[in-house]
Length: 502
Image 1: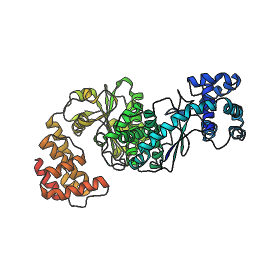
Image 2 (image 1 turned 90 degrees about the horizontal axis):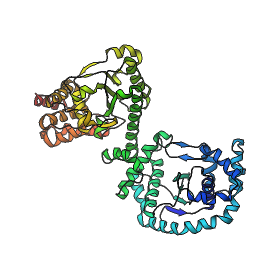
Image 3 (image 1 turned 135 degrees about the vertical axis):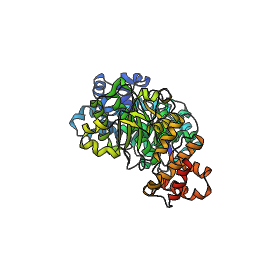
Image 4 (image 1 turned 30 degrees about the horizontal axis):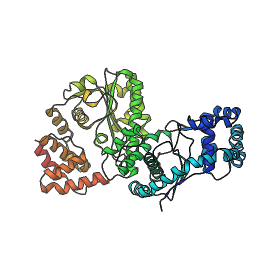
């Protein structure tokens, strides 16, 4: 039996009828048609408390929406009894209005509502049964529901829909085609599955997570149906999820997006600090390659400015990162501030105006002024960062990547990445996974000019390097992808790779 059932309930319809007729959260022909049936004084009471009684996706949730709309609309208790039982004096006049008109609604309005809803509900249920939407969605997301009730109402055009009024009930209007309705229901069914799959995270706990949870539902919906997404304003979030590697769970995808949302928060704050001097904020490294893991990766980004920031601005930039440190991935942030002129005409080693990473966190907290005074100069790593940014980098805020970053010369790029593995013979003992995979991608860059992630470098090594080294590369890849260290000794591979690079 299909877990998704289409239902028509008089109490659910009545609650949204009252809001629509008052024009509270809804502005539609339905409300205007029945407005003459309620006293203007009662409508004025509801309008006075519109903000408290309504929700708007991603923006606000009225403090009275839960007890006076959501719980009342479940259909468990007749409105007269339900609203009379609420003893909060601040809600008293709204409860009086919402509880006063149910019987009249049943006599004069609901029969016509049934005539409108019943044919639509029957066709929609047939379409849902044929689609096997529930089973397919559960397999994809990796969670299950016992049941899902589609509560049809005809009063919610021009306002919030798909509002969960219980753990298994969701409100839908009928102002769209049946195919569009099916996609809308699919989106919401996935949202309910995600509430289970993402339990224990910040998802659905604050408005801050709204876009990335809605976007994840859209990502799964597109995979489910293979057509355009339903909420097109989520396209950028869907694109982010689409760039991630295959096989990640819903939880893993969400945690990556949570970090991406944090980077957007940083960019917004940096714009407030730097104003028109901010050219853009650009993600590189694992966030750009699509292999970011909040448990093992750092958050790499470049901040491009038109002019040298003042010390006061630098202090503010660093304070933002220190304040957000508790929300950062396990290896923290790695940020460099660079001038737009140096991005447009890069000369190795490229100058920087400010740098921050986890290695400098304590120094910043101990004496921020002293740190700011010395943290500038030339950084040989920037040639590699610029090359990666131009190849796969993502614009978090500002001008497009290719408009800001000119190509770095091949010689500068190779010099930069060779510097990063210069001590590989010793460092491989302490950090074998990083060194082995990094040597692979440096060799790929030297031989083919390729710009690869660590994982891509390891895979390249398995295809292009001598068979005798495949065992250690496999071990490093396994450690990188599944956590833990490298089960093989990488010393001989490191010495061989360094000779190749000479």
